[in-house]
Image 1 (cartoon, rainbow, N blue to C red):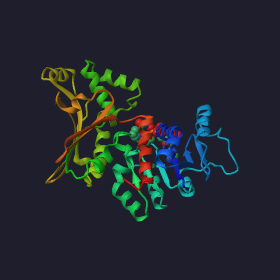
Image 2: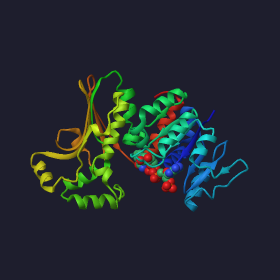
Image 3: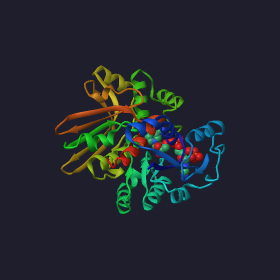
Image 4: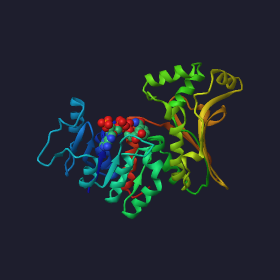
Length: 346
Ligand SMILES: NC(=O)c1ccc[n+]([C@@H]2O[C@H](COP(=O)([O-])OP(=O)(O)OC[C@H]3O[C@@H](n4cnc5c(N)ncnc54)[C@H](OP(=O)(O)O)[C@@H]3O)[C@@H](O)[C@H]2O)c1
């Protein structure tokens, strides 16, 4: 039986997933015995499509390329158009809803209500959207349990670099005492440029020109993005919660070229370090720039790359390095969660 997917939001990441499904269809079937069909897609501007027997994904991408929307998709008598996100979730009959709308960390919307609606109707949720997970993890997990569904969110912390599942499965049996990472590619890019001699404003301008930084870079350079990711890690790695206000936060705006130069003379390099520690008195979290010694594995992470180190009681310090964003990388995070749902794994 094919596993039916509904895509809520059809931007960069959801399109990345469709591209992967097209590219890997045969390999998924032949090597893994898995078949995924996309029965519905909904997006406010690009439009919506539903076909209970599965959409033709090549035709979906052709329509998008030729018109920027789903309007050129060749419809059959089984194709329905015009459904918004909630009608789609309600009517699509999918096994899994892919929630890939924009991140809103103020109230999590519209993603949070999409997740709630999907789980309440017994559908699994796979998402790369940080908002709902950082803000309402406990509620969503209990909704999932109550309705016999699951919610997976590997891509919310480091895109397709599999840090959540690594901690949950591969490192199992360890006590993870501390997690320390570079979780924001934009700020790491800026610090890398500053290390090469650029001033903060010029480095930010270059990050914006290259599409790494948004017009409003606050979430990245002031440490909010890393703060939300630590909240997700608290749930996923330590099985506990930490409020955002409990995570001390300092961004990178105040770092001067003089500080960078001084650190260099001491054989150190500035990085924005996000850290969570499981202490006897509870979770302690912080996001702050640190001048790291060169033998610290995180000091060698350049450009927009991300990295995370797990301090484990048995296997020692385990560090994973990889992209923290990207169309195919984050599309892959959605795929790997879907594959694990089908395998009834984690
Ligand atoms: N891009 C990455 O590398 C990356 C990495 C990790 C995590 N993420 C997360 O993954 C999610 C998707 O990212 P993205 O880069 O694909 O963003 P995106 O390109 O902005 O796509 C989001 C899509 O959701 C649509 N949307 C907005 N409101 C909607 C609604 N009510 N119902 C249905 N669709 C709606 C948007 O449509 P309109 O444009 O018409 O408003 C847009 O097409 C975000 O939460 C992001 O933070 C992204």
